[in-house]
Image (cartoon, rainbow, N blue to C red; front, side, top):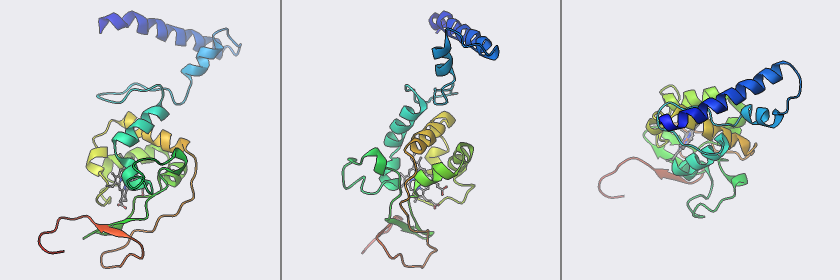
Length: 191
Ligand code: HEC
């Protein structure tokens, strides 16, 4: 670890020099590196285990794959063996997940990331939507993810842009869904 420290010091002082140049309002010779230091998608420091990539968007793409997020939020992901272009990912799934809680749908995360703030996204995923979140969304796993990783997924999905695909509304218990659905609670015996 100590080995890397001198390198880190050099980088930090380079950023400081550029920041000073910037504050003066004069375009400095180090302008290019000033831009990269201010890149909104540069990886911020993370406390604890977190994914590392060239930038937050790339980290987010990777995390959504290993986090299985497409399985329930991307139409056709399973049927097409993951062969869905980024433009069609995360626009929601029209197969309902049915249980004693009613029927819930993998939401259109493209719309949600356009409309909601990154902080709200983190809050929802850390708190199972303030305790209101229904299965089978893996709330207990996202609650334990590193906050930087949660933010990276938001940045990636948001970077895909809006997708107006509509997803059915959640239904209360006892209401019959019009489209396809699967029962996702354990059962024993026939049927
Ligand atoms: C097994 C299916 C499944 C998987 C896997 C899954 N989700 Fe979900 N997700 C859902 C369902 C169903 C809902 C709606 C739950 C509800 O309405 O209470 C949901 C809701 C959400 C919401 C809340 C949307 C809102 O209304 O504000 C977010 C954000 C979200 N998922 C992100 C993710 C991310 C990120 C991953 C990957 C780490 C992921 N999901 C993986 C099924 C899934």
